[in-house]
Length: 271
Image 1 (cartoon, helix red, strand yellow):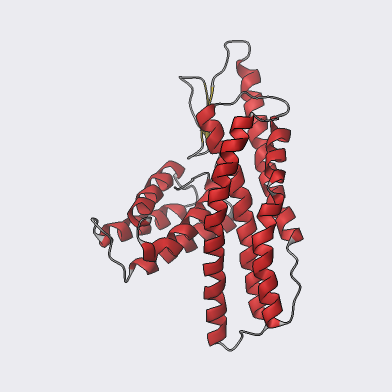
Image 2 (image 1 turned 90 degrees about the vertical axis):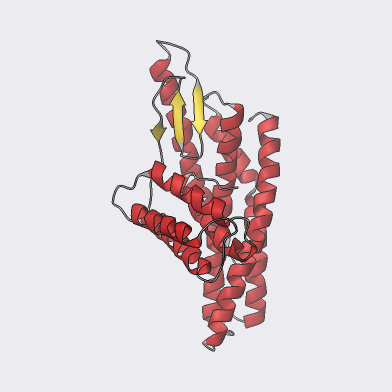
């Protein structure tokens, strides 16, 4: 099992992140219902389907939050590779299975009751979200073991995990290897989040920083993300600049939270 201190710290951080997700999911559902209401579809199956999609995406985000939080805590406290690491990390993930499911389910159930059609079942979506993270855990644990085996004859390896870019260094002078695959769905979600930031900035002033500069960074980031082989380090740097500029502006919180969730699959964790 994991060090109890790692588990305790991760639990506290996950709890805070999940509270933020509740607010964000509620905003997303309210916006979707309002948009469909304007089209006369407020009591249709379209509302149920859209809410289902939002809740399923929220559960995937929650599973990624658990994984990214564990990696963040481990990067600060250090970790030794072991044959049981993958099992231990999966146990930590499954410990939060109810928390991944419960709030999105409640939101979907409320919409189903209001509309009077559909079924409030998110079990399959939750299981898929958990399975995706399990694959990441297996890759992570196996990578550590193989690097340990490669260095066992020459020296005792030191593992430094740089969670913000998904990099692992084995020793003080080693070269970092970055693991940050970008699927078409993840790329699309990030581009959509950047577009939301851009649109939200249209009628909002930023304290102490020219809005035009931030918009330029947003466009530069979109260009980099759209490349066939994007520079992940550059993306991380640009996105942190955007996040720093907008994170304290109340009217930009929906855009900030959407951007924050879109970055989790890339191994980038915003405050």
